[in-house]
Length: 121
Image (cartoon, rainbow, N blue to C red; front, top):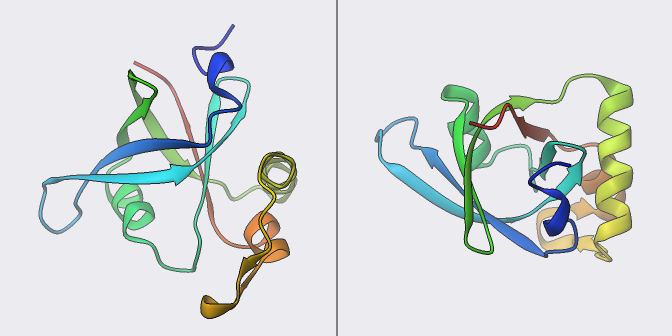
């Protein structure tokens, strides 16, 4: 059983990335999904600092309800994997999108970038 299993229904996690410019720790609260031993994070827009930080340095600490694990992030590029991860997020979160930034529910679930974290240390 994955360490993530007890937390599949938790609303948010915190991630701590290394700032790509500053080199300093950057904490961000995010919605997340779980598939097996993989934590899924969906970018709200085409640009997000936390995602850019992870692309520059894939090491990340994940905090969920007092539990902290270090993992390795990767950008999801496989279309089938992206769709499966979108299905997980769509099932977990009843959210209609954010018109103020032009983000629809469908785009959030299936089009914007997704980061997967695994290889837990």
